[in-house]
Image 1 (cartoon, one colour):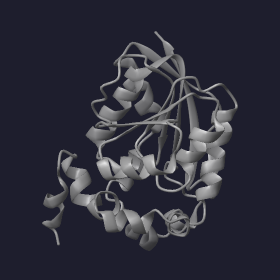
Image 2 (cartoon, one colour; image 1 turned 120 degrees about the vertical axis):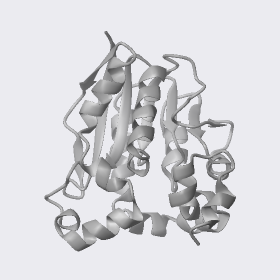
Image 3 (cartoon, rainbow, N blue to C red; image 1 turned 90 degrees about the vertical axis):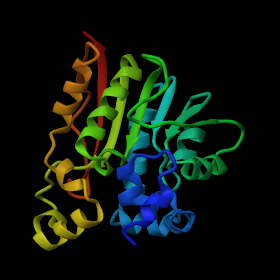
Amino acid sequence: MQRLYKYFLDGVPEYLARYYWWAYLWSVGAWFFDHQTIINAVLFGQYRNLMEGTLKLLKARAPGRMLQLACVYGKLTPELASTLQIARLHLADISTLQLNISRSKVANGALAPVRMNAEALAYRDGAFDTLLIFFLLHEMPGEARRNTLSEAMRVISDRGHIIITEYGQSPRKNLLYRFPVSRWVLGRLEPFLPGFWGEELEGSLIEAASLHNKRVNRVNDAVPVFNGFYRIAEYEVLGA
């Protein structure tokens, strides 16, 4: 079983194939997980709250030219494409399978899916006014996460906004985190989550912005979901 991941490399990062082939790169796994009941169970019943909270932030301002960084199971992508005032939703993911699934959900050419590694985007500097990262960062090792945030800062325009929906930082108020057994199980299923739990996201964004002579301002306090186990955060990116 440990060697199966090698059959799924096909240009994707080694860590993605090794740890997540069964969820994102295997057609049977993708079919299974792309059911609303399963997605909701994985997120402890919070998918709708997370999706609606994310959409609320996006609807509060004109998104302009928008990029969704990485595909998402469920209804989020078609909701973005149909409810936001944008001509086209750009979507970048390294998995052809995931891009095909997302493409099948959005009609009328409203989606522009492109196969790209989040660590090395082929878009020009300042190409987007809004960038959404929905449950991607915790699935990356530290170096890949830093590279991805750097690329996000590069392709976002001055006064552009980045919205990140993710696990909360060390969410001690939530029992799933407080109990060692459940925390251990989650860490086994998501091998990079423990490192992400301990990372100060805003500090990582500030560091990434500085690489491109930009600054980051948090728009509001992060919106806690499920007693802080998850969060939805919005940041404005400014020129130096």
